[in-house]
Length: 545
Image 1 (cartoon, rainbow, N blue to C red):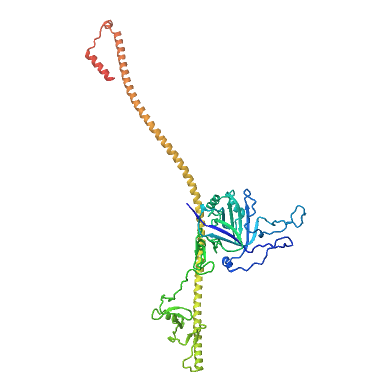
Image 2 (cartoon, helix red, strand yellow):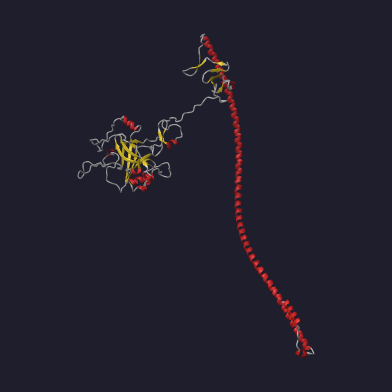
């Protein structure tokens, strides 16, 4: 995407041509003529209200890229002071007749003139720009050379020359940066333009413009196709439409739009011209705000409506005894005491005072004296009435203010007492709060301990329930086995009892046979058991089993 920029032309207008005098002074310094011609009309038109000031140019050259080119100076070499460095004459051998040198700091050039900044009327694509020079406008004076060098430190390797220019403008200066290549200048413009110089002042931004040429001369004629950039009267920075919005107000003064927004007044910062028309207040009745048939009191200025509208002007007369009222728009004076217009009172065109007219009949000085005396008595009585009225009003106001002051004092004392009570309650509540917080902390600790114990008990109960189910299973198994073993034991015991009975029967039979008389017959005899009996016995035996 192409970016359009404006090329600027910087011109140093030197105040007077530094002509070298043919005769050297006594100390060997070159003299510059002090008489200058009066400025012409074209000079005044181009300069305006600007006056020549001291211009200082400080040069900082990159030592790696430093060349022996002597034409780097922006200003004429004659503007530099030339004085001998040593008053002792050197030996004539091996020393030329004339030696040129500088006194003081040889890197500072001082002259007197005006710096013109011209902007090219046509916009140029930044990629097609063939300039390697950028100008930083309105650099804050709080930035020292060291701070400026730290600001552009990442670009030291591509900057060939740095020139700091001061023209007497308060709290700001200009910086010319000469780069080695056009690509490095474009990269610097894209990176640093609009970036704040430091994080503590975000409003102090870096304003960079492209510079096509830097020249110096003695004329003030602007180059063809260029327009000089004006200065904003508020921030004293150059106004460029391509960078900031420019606002021209009714008095034809131009400002930055952002600067005029900060101006809180409705007047112009330069000529104090009011930009918005003032609103004119219309006269209305002070009671009903009516706008027709209005009368103003000549004593206190009260405005009221006529008797055919609301009658507030006549009500004001009954309250204050102000006799005369002027009708707005006609300048006719009404006398409420005589209930008629006072035609003898007219308004003088010269001093605006109320004067008395002469009678059309012209009865003489006696009638005039009587009229003056009558007017004097009337005015005296009216002034006395007004004095009494205002004294009474002042006394009422004083009593009202005194009562209001007493009420305010009593209310203040009551509020002070309530405040003291509330402060005491707040202190007590603060102590109670601290004690409750301590108690809550203890209860929280205790609750945590009990919760931990409860968790352990629950785990133990769960483990015991698990063991209980296992033991119940084992117990049921063992109980079943016990019953089976008991059944087997009972069967074994029954069998053994039968065997014991059979043995007992056999033993008894042996003893009976041994003691019997038919012992021998029984010994040689045979015992026959019937089948039914044998089957019945076996069945009984199986039943026992």
